[in-house]
Image (cartoon, rainbow, N blue to C red; front, side):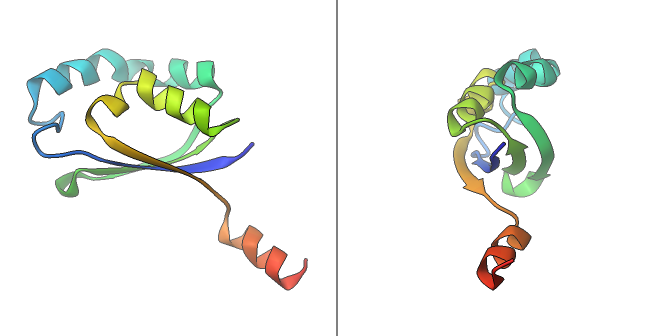
Amino acid sequence: MPTFSVNMKHTVESCPMFNTEVRKKFKEVVGKREEIAKKHRVKVLSAWTSVLDHLAFFIVDAPSQFAVEDYFKEIGFAFWNTIEIRQVKTVEEVVKKVVGE
């Protein structure tokens, strides 16, 4: 299954920590992430945030970019974030290809 890097950024004004409307939406869906991930066949491998920069970084396995998009839309993260999705490979995979292994 392909691996994707999902990078999200939002403004201070749209941050769930400070915006009551966004916080309400966040609370409604945050507990459903695993259920929604299964629905879209998305496996979250890692998730990180830089709180003061209002950034979040996810590494996920998914059958397609569309599945990743649908997952982040359904869990509501697309509501307050600008989202960049890129299919990625490990550096080790690229190194093996370059050296002919």
